[in-house]
Image (cartoon, rainbow over all chains, first blue to last red):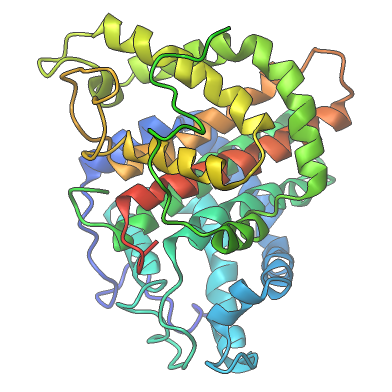
Length: 194
Length: 194
C-alpha cells in the first residue's frame, strides 16, 4: 500500500519537534511505558491494524454524534465535508499502526509534533486544503482520549489472545495514547508551561 | 473527619473557573461520560474511598521512583520534604472520593481550576508554604494520568463486585480522571488555545 496522501513521516516536510530525547525519556517514565509494554504493543498491532479502519469509523461515529466535535471537520456553515473526511481518514487509520509499531526516536518525535500542529491554527486544514474551523481546542483533544482508549478494548478481544494478554495490550495502548496526546499538547503551550 | 487543611471546596477561598457550564457540558460529551457512568462512579466510591490512602501511597511510590517527578515535591536541592508530603496527602486522598461523588456543578468546576492553578506558578506551594519547584510542567500532569488510571483497576477488584461491574467502574473512572485533567490544563493555556 502506498503512504496516505499528506502523510510525511520521516520526510523533510515534517515539523521539527522542540522536545528533546531526554525529555521524551522522562515522559516515558511518567507514563510508565516499559519494554514489556512495547512487546504488547507489537502484539496489539497484529490485532488492531486489520481493524484500524473500523476503529476510525467508530470514533468518527462518536464525533458525528456531537455537533461541537463534528464542526471541526465540517464547512464553516456546518455542512459536512466528505472530501476532507475522506482525505484525512487514511492518515488516521495509519496512526493506529504507528502507535503500536514505530520506534520512539527523533523521527517519531517530529511526527508527533506535526500531528499536534495539524490540530492548531499553525497547520490545521493546510494538508487537505479545507475551509473547516482552523483550530481544535486542546480540551477536546485531551478529552477525546477517553473514547480512543476505551473503545479499543473490544477490538482487542476475540482474536485468539488470552484475557491476560488482552489486558496487557490494553494497558500498553492506554499508556501509548496518553504519551502521544501529551506530545501533541506541546503545539498548544510554550516551553515554560509544557 | 474534618476537612483536610488547605482544602477549600465550595468556599470563597477557591479560584473562580473561567470555564462555563455549557463548555463543561460539551466536554462531558467528548469524554463520553453518561448517567450510567455516574452510577458506577458512586459504586466505585464505596470501593475506593476506604483504600484511597493506599492508592495515593502507590502513586507516590511511582513518583519517588522517578527523580524528575520526585523533585516537584522536594526542596530545591533535591532533599525530600516530608512536611509538604504530609500536608498535601489528605487532599490527594480526598480527591479520590471527590472524583466519584461530587456533582459536576459550578463549585466542582471552580475546585478543578483551583487544583490546576496549584500545579502552576500561580499557586503551587502557596497552600503549604513550601520551597519546592514552583511549577509542574503540563506534560507530566497529562502523562501521569496513565498510572492514575491503570493502577486503580486492582483496587476495584476483589471487593464483591462482578467482573462486569468492575469493568464499568473502571471505564467510568477512566473518563472521570481524563475530564479532571482536561480541566486542570486550563490553568496552563489561554482561552483561545484551551
